[in-house]
Length: 349
Image (tube, rainbow, N blue to C red; front, side, top):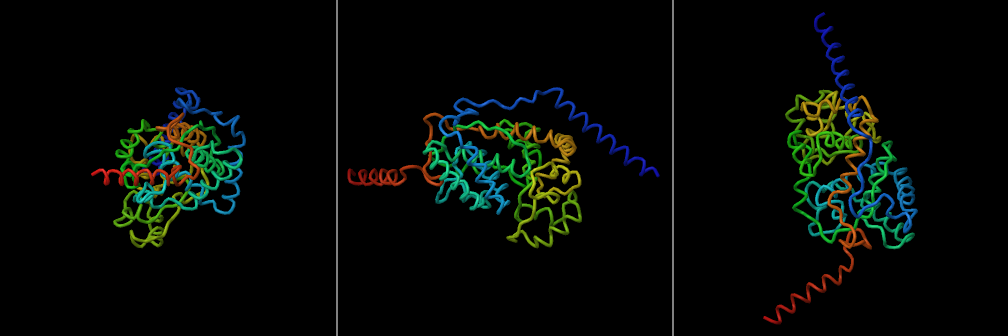
């Protein structure tokens, strides 16, 4: 009898605390979205390529109709590009090796990369070569969220494409087996706070993950994982070397919504970095709040993702507008220049 009376009381206190947290958000913060950094604008292509956003969205509607899995893949490309050396399209570049060849990027979808290049073809045919692959990547990620049921939001544009990539920078990407303490420190280097981290983690409300990213929670069994979920996962992932994949969100795996946070409350998060958000006292209240109020989650996600889209961008005369997303312009000329320089030095010596 004592236990049955305590549990409802605890739930009531949890509910009230979450409501108070939600009230605090709306009372203490205006709902204005981040402004554009110097060089970017929310109307950057309004005169030079007015159909740009319509082109991107219409093409992705066709793509997702046949392959909805590309939606989360496009968001991953956006995040892994921006977090390394800014939103500059460096992840798109071929390399031997390049950013994409690094361990944390080996799951990047080749189909999604091709979709970005397909959009670039259509846009450049319609408007000329004035829209960067970096901007197309940002727009594709935005529409991946919206067309999967998430919020619709404006993003500032005007980014230029990088002339290089950063292999070293990929080592700073957040890891799926990190604790919240490590995750918060990782994001703090990019000036994201606790609210930003919990909101951005909500991107795991759709998409899939390979066994090696969470098998450490199955063997031995993580006490913070729901046992029924663990049994299901073990049938899919019999070892860390399995090439199988499973849904990040067991409730609505192809929809961008707040069910991810409900999963965490039920100990059904897939990664250590996910489930630990419901354990750490700094983030647990936010998980509860986003689980109760999807609008609040959407607002905070949009705020954080717009700021992420403006990390260390190239603008003005920096970088270039690539003719192809996977190679820098005049690549042959650059190679010839390097070879000629080497030959000249050899002859002079």
